[in-house]
Length: 111
Length: 115
Image (cartoon, rainbow over all chains, first blue to last red; front, side, top):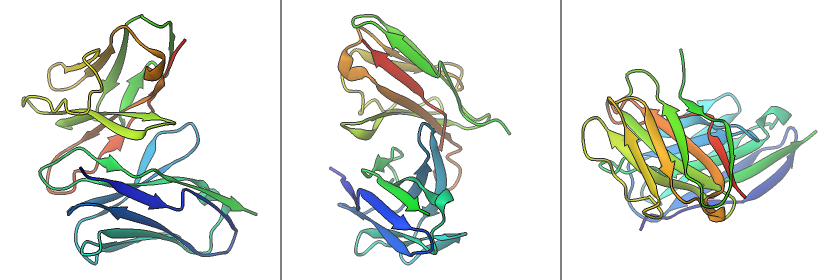
């Protein structure tokens, strides 16, 4: 059974600081997704990572994938309040279209 | 362009009643998914439709849950004889299934409360 773990579950950080959210998964997977969810809202797609060593960046967020270690990271640079949300990683191996989600990381940016 | 839409946005029902939740996927998307988000279980896959193929029902928690997709577009998730543990946000997603991305786009969800 595919399991996806995220840590930390909760993260409170000051504006301007850097931090990393970690996503570990239990079996080989070819696709790794990051989503953002604001309170009371649905999921917004941030990144899709397809191969080992893939790195994608959008604004202050950067995601990377290490398929050998079964690890993805979401790095936040110089956090701003607008980044406060819950971030989910999800895994979707080829041939298995359903996504298995991590537990989510609730990020709060303090002014 | 229009995204995934779901209705109703909120549904309050009494234990034992049946409910129907509706999902309109992005036009042209051949794949449609239902997920459930609850405090205790996180985000769980329920069912997946791809074109005219038989749906993957492996995530449905009990036989009280069923879903159909008519004409390859709109989908309805039905929960019969609702129980309090069915209270959750039900999310629908669609993808084009073209290429290897399988990027899924989510609707706003239906918040179901079973009293």
